[in-house]
Image (cartoon, rainbow over all chains, first blue to last red; front, side, top):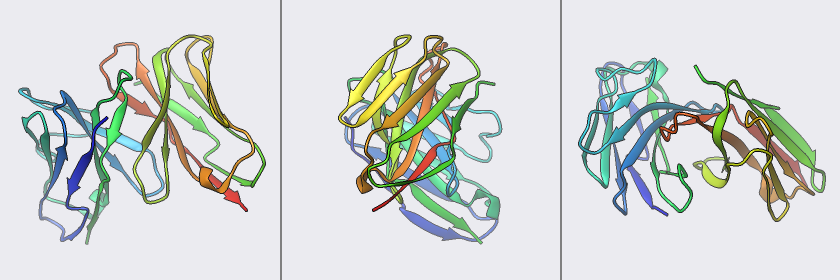
Length: 115
Length: 112
């Protein structure tokens, strides 16, 4: 299992600014994922972040807009750049952990509102 | 690209009634997982199904994986108010990259 914390838990930001979300895990993990979840909607994978390599982005998400860092096996950051109201969402990080292959543990999420 | 469809989107039941949510993939899956997200919370892993035709039970919850490994269901017997939340299926494609493709989720409301 894994315990994941995210900072900040929520924020209200102005259009055009950037926000960096931190994800800290209590154990070393290889694969970390960043998701976006709009209220009442499903989870959409933004990117996969493996330590020591560039993040792999899903279709519709680009590095310039969502730069990701993965400096070690317990930490990652996601930056939401040049924000617009359409970026208002919950951002979740997750890790593969546990006894079941591909089982993911999720952080509590960061609720972002862009005004 | 690969898609996972889930129905119904919402379900309101009286406490004690049964509930079922269905999940269909556009492609064959290597396995399928189910997660539960309580209101205001984050998704929590429930179970993983790997084998064709597999059935697993967790107390009042029964999970099935179709013979063709393209569909799955979650059935809750005699719902309780603690079952309230959104249930997501998530498929792992045959490429086994570890990426999960989430269904749209079914939100369950239980009236006491």
